[in-house]
Every structure is written in structure tokens, then in C-alpha cells.
Amino acid sequence: MKKFLLAIAVLMTAFSVDAQTLTGREIVKKVKDNPDGETRYAKMDLVLEKANGSKRERKVESWAMDIGEDTKTMMFFTYPGDVKGTGFLTWNYDEIGKDDDKWLYMPALKKTRRISGSSSKTDYFMGTDFTYDDMGDRNIDEDDHKFLRMETIDGHECYVVESVPKDKREIYSKRISWIRKDCFMGVKVEYYDKLGKLHRVLNISDIKQVQGFWTRGKMVMENVQTKHKTILTFSDLKFDLKIDGEMFNVAKLEKGL
Image (cartoon, rainbow, N blue to C red; front, side, top):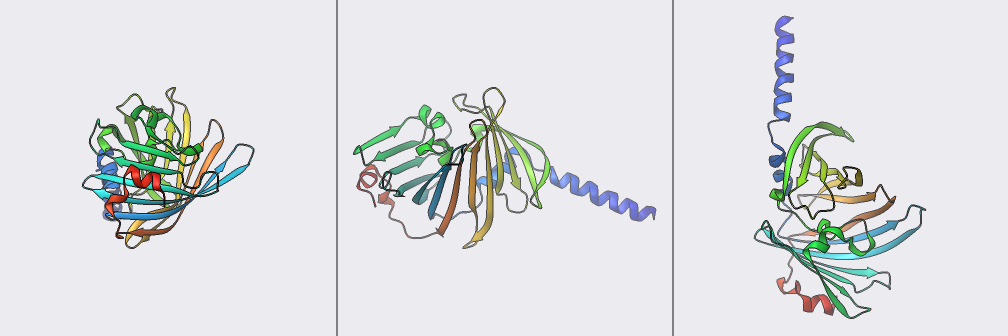
């Protein structure tokens, strides 16, 4: 009996050590390194919901291409009519300290606006609860990461990691992320404002494999202070498809689909 109890104790200790052998940075790096193909395409349905329950729907098509460690992305709104043709182009750089290049084209004004580095961190994208910076990737070393604990969400064991931005221009003081241990996909993120109060909560669901790549099917970002939320649903996901790299420029942005 003593040998049996000893064996159980050893197994429990091994599990505990295994759960914490990865540092916060290593966990986030595994998320970053999750393969997602060299190119990507998706349709997105956006629902903007106010505190009173009123809703607005928008539809978007998106293309992305990796160029080394950098990524170029093009999005076009296809519905409704008042935003149809609006385009968003991003050149996302992995280099620390280098601001991404972002352009927003408004067809009604026939004008392209370049989004500055400071604006991208504080302004929200097209009335959603996502900032312009949220629409792209971050270099993992733009933040200091700390493993906090293990928790279970919807039956999946998750690492809980705190990330504190080094750039004080960010609108939040820290993020706390719940990352599934089995596939290193995030399922929840809490954003805290400069006063340390909970500001926004992102919940991610419908995580599955498409063409062998782990994908997220739904994202809900809620501003808990204003009670406004954005519900983002992905469909028609495609990976490693042929995309002309020349499409990721301002001329194509202004020309539209």
C-alpha cells in the first residue's frame, strides 16, 4: 500500500512539475509558433452590439501572406452598403520598436488614411471593440510574460499567463491569457486599463483543425466598462492558397475587390 501511495505521489509531482516547466515567454512563443500556413483567406461576420441590445452587422473578406517573420494583410468590407468597399491594409513587422504600417480606405470620401503608431494603439477599428493593434500580431518580446497558474476552461487544461507591455503607449496595463495546453490556442484574454481595472474581455471558441491547422471559429470582445461587444465569426477558412503578393499595396486598397 505504501508503494502504491508513493507511486501516486510521484505521478502527481511529475504532473505538477510538467505543468510549470514552461516559462511565460515559452508558452507565448508556442502560441506564436503555431503553424497557420504561408497564406490565409477567411470570410468574417461582425456583429456590433450595444449595451441596450441593439445590433449592427458587417461582413468582411480577408487575405494574409507571411513574408519571413512579417505579415501583410488586406481586408475589405462587403456589407452593408454604407461601409461596402472600405479597405484595411496592414504590413505587420516582427521587429521590436518598428511600428506596423496601416492604411484605411474610405470609399465614401475617396480618401486613404494612414494609421500612425500611436493611434493604432488607442483607436478602435471601424466601431468594433478591437484596436488597430489588436488586428495584427505582436512580437512576443514587446511584453514581459509571467506564468501564473493552471486552470481548466470548458474541460481543457490551460496555462494562465500575465503579459505586461513594455511600450507605455498601450491602452492597457496588462493582459492575462488562458492558453490551452493541448494545442497552444488562446481561449480567453483579459485586458486591464492603466488603473488596473478590467477593461475588455476576449473569449475565443469553436477551436478546431482546418486543413491540419488549428483555427478559431468565433471571437467575442466585450468592453466590460461600456457593455459594448463585438462578435466575430469566421467562415470559409483556407490556408496555403495561391495569393498574388502584389495585392498588398495602397493602389489595390483603393481599387477594391
